[in-house]
Length: 396
Image 1 (tube, one colour):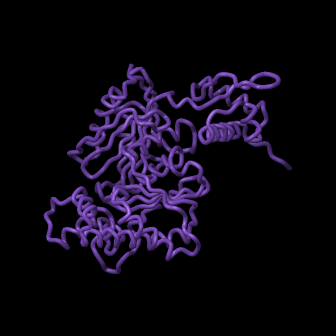
Image 2 (cartoon, one colour):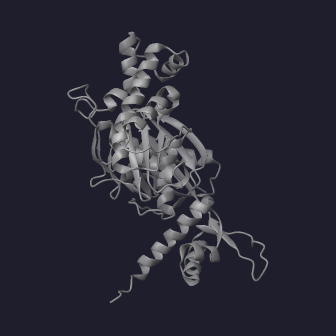
Image 3 (tube, one colour):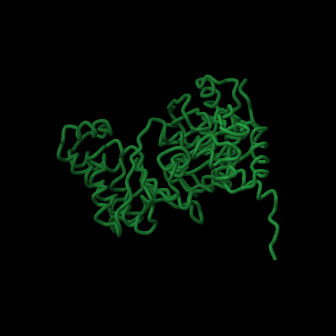
């Protein structure tokens, strides 16, 4: 016996199907939406009518046609509201205000003098109206706030379960900020948020299976499998930097020894460079890049070694998950070919089949835009995500 599905569930699925098609392919007429999605014209008309009424999609001008009525295209209204993205770093916060396609409207970086959760929530709440003002759209509705940070995140409860870097356990940061800002707030691991942005609007837009590698203070690798971010059973998937590199080796921030990130994160590269040269602790990433440009042999050796080490470890992940592409982001990508070429070569040597292409991404605000993508993902129902809901607030 065929069971009749729940109408509310079917409507939500149809809505998501249509929105994702418009996101990927741009404006489409109702007839085109029905043909491509294989939904009935009545179902498409019903869903599009709701979306137009909510302001989530808009109707364009009728397109010329040889016969009959001219079709009217509909498209997602990314100017429907503003999104705020906060990327928490060790002692600073990258902040961005975007439209709902995560196109930046304003961006700043602010110091984070305290990591105490309430202090962080106060800082972020005070920054929201500043960002809205800088965006120049004080009349627009603030749709929500996304926060990304390194850690194990329960995205349903929007809680930081554990962050070694911040020394947090079970911190409800989204709730803390939502109570102050009076808008919906979503919290996610920083690499996961970056992967969501790449999947929605970036280099992974046309790929249903991809790995998103991030090499900066840490090393992580998020996975998108069949179009859905894979978080694991406890929200701890993607902690690639904590795979074993050397038994009983260097101490990692997680408290264990020999982790990959203890050797080949950008911070670890800098530490190894200073140790090898007797350099000052003030020698940082800009000086390392200058040394690479001058073909300093010690700098080149350390960076190439990092590329090979990460590439070898990445090959194991590729052999297991078989992604279509690997998007590579994070500070280490700006080290250029000294880092990327050895990584690609090691990957090619160790993968079972021809390795997927590596697509490097290094754009300003890309990580904070990842946080803002959490708002877009929820707003347009691209995937069901957890959030702490508060009434919308307009900064009129």
